[in-house]
Image (cartoon, rainbow, N blue to C red; front, side, top):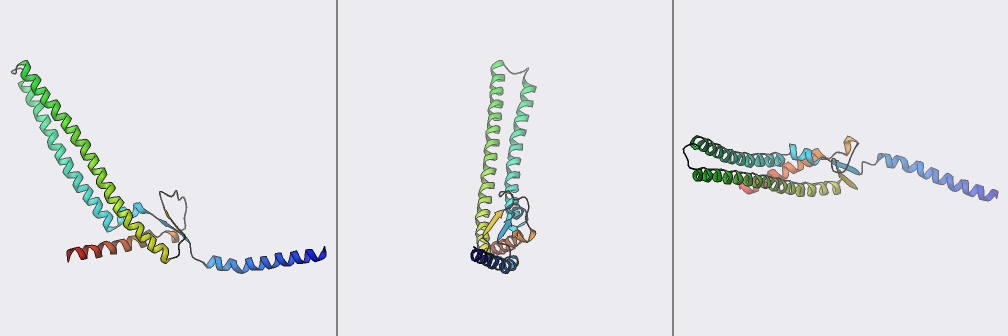
Length: 186
């Protein structure tokens, strides 16, 4: 029985010593989990800013077109109101039908433009996401990260700032976009 206790205490002592020797090595090891803020990349990278500008430009064109159509409807309504007393019942009904058709066309165009903007946003974001995630994979492999979490989608509540690789990704993404742009212009 005494032999078993000595053997057991020897094994536990060796395990304890092994644990003590490996703890400093574990503490010295760098983070193996990284965090990425994709929204920040969308807002601050050159490609993200260009995408926002493209979406805003398209949106303003669509707004201008809708405003023009809306003004046309208002003009028709005013004209119809002024001519109301002069027009026959059939002519008034025809004008009202024209206005209803224009209003329906306006609403259809408005819905189409909303859909077009959503498609454009999705297309741009998907392309950026594909590019960024490719870069993140390269960065993760070169830094031996086991896991990279997206800050907002991953439900990250707290993380050590040294784990955030967003700035590194933005820098490399901007370089990649600049070199692709340079190649296209040559």
